Image (spheres, rainbow, N blue to C red):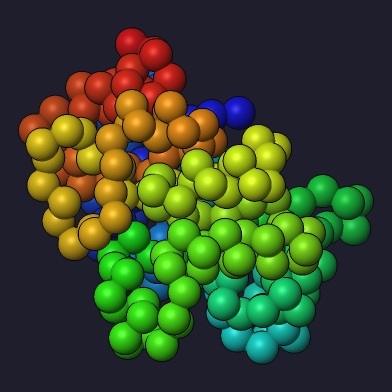
Length: 233
């Protein structure tokens, strides 16, 4: 299961739904992040699910295990397809998250752990976060912790996805933001890659925001990324 996920980082539901109306009968996989969720709450997730969209609920939970478990129980009721927590929250917290999101019938969304944000450089990680290891070593260590906790995969930049796949295996899901077309602006991203490179690495999902949402023709831009990553027109 591979796909292009559109990061719908808009200010409100009206803007989000108007944007998605441009796709007509096509229902792209969408990411609901903090900005829109904190404005609209659970209703935006319910609306998008009712319209037929798959949802990556990107809230990056990071708190004590019991709090995360309770929060995940609530979020599970929204029926997201993918949901994430921060790997830095420890193995115990990730296990609690998985327990909380698992429903009584045993069903659950894909649960992944955020490793290091694509806006974080090696220098920032070493000197501001005081993590002395290399970015690759750190991401791989977090990935192994996520696997120990029972999670399905991680969120990482395409630059680390390859070593994660080689070390842990192809069944361990990698979701990679920071995807840009060749020669495109990086915006506030530091560790970026192209959809073609992400395809070669074997990552499972790419997350694309502004290159689609701020494009003159979002539908055409979306199809460009689909074609580059999946070979679909």
